[in-house]
Length: 388
Image (cartoon, rainbow, N blue to C red; front, side, top):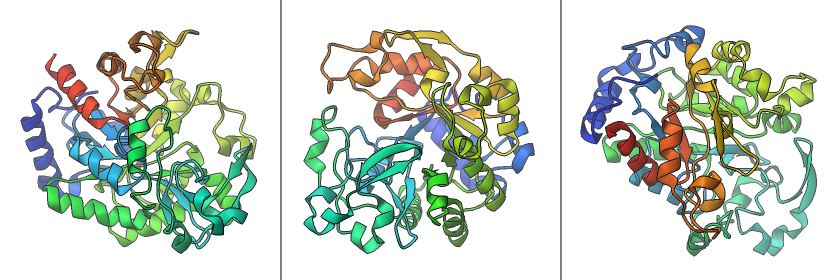
């Protein structure tokens, strides 16, 4: 499922993208709901998701291969490196109901909270989606308190260079991200897209901090809740996406983890289905009734052998495209431990392997885009792919 600008060079693609974004105006995302999902793959359908270059390069938590994730430093760099969309951000709430951008509600690994003696007593052990987790949680802090913290590199063993930037950036709010998006769109003269995620929505709803209503309220306030809005919403919990589908008209994506796992909302409600059930033709048809795409883990696109090397290509791309769903799998990273074994070079945990080879292999499956920590590598790999 390509688009007409798929084989153009960078300049042609950008020109077309600009024309589609600014010329189509209100029609940029076309239809809504099921009709939109069903026609998403139709030839000549012009706008919204289809106006993006294919394969789309999505900056995973920004440019997290080079800067501490979910910071304006990381988001900004992702745009500078050529990302078509920035995943800004993973949304979790504060005690006073604000939405902030952190990969997880537990912030011990991504901020300097452990160095703040005044917050020592906030360290707790909680059960998060059935897993006992110890640390500091956003829901135990007010926004003002969180703003006194600074971001740090989450995986320093793989990214020692990123620790240079520890302490430089604060935690962004979703409201700040929406304003930043407008600012960057004006400054760069082309529409900036973002791809926020509702994190652990069942857990937070249980605490009286429902995420979807808060997301919808902020999007409505900024006029970004429409079918032509450059904001794609995603979640690992299908019921969160169904809830958002009733609140906003934005493009929606269901994230899918390993085949043998169950989304936590299914666990909570006693729904016995696993991800394997969701990626059957029947499961995909159901998803297409309320979402425009899926975000599968890369292993659902090409399975892996026991030794970590690539094995068989699945039918997921073809099956999803058949019902009009796009696929944005996650996550491509340049460092050895994150690559299939045949693309690794040496054994150093922070050394780059043959990321270009891996990108080429995944792009060849027909995916519509990919989340990557290294947007610049993704952009060059796409160039190779569309020109090759």
